[in-house]
Length: 146
Image (cartoon, rainbow, N blue to C red; front, side, top):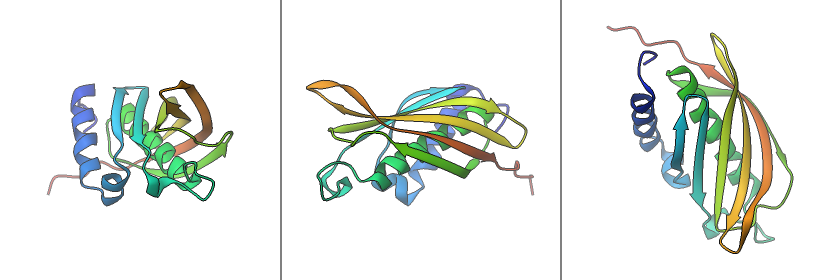
């Protein structure tokens, strides 16, 4: 997949996402797909909230992880998996939508390093930063033809 252009990588990414049960539940929407930047969003649903009424940290982290993996895939044009990530919650995720922005910091031979910011959005106020994170995205070996 490494010789594909941005649009071909984007189409491969969306097809792979549709095959994943978790992404079917999370339902991320791809807003921006560039070689060094990805933006995705999800509509907040009641089952994503915790006992204080804002989005559960696990859902925020899952969106951040997904944005990082998709950013890594766009950067290298190959299949990837998350090797490691860290997340820092900086404010409650209160809103009707969450948006995650992944930015490539470095693309290496076997790993892509990605920074992510997650924003809580609502119609009555500007987006609010609710989490930041970093991820190491492992580039999988290309599959050999049988």
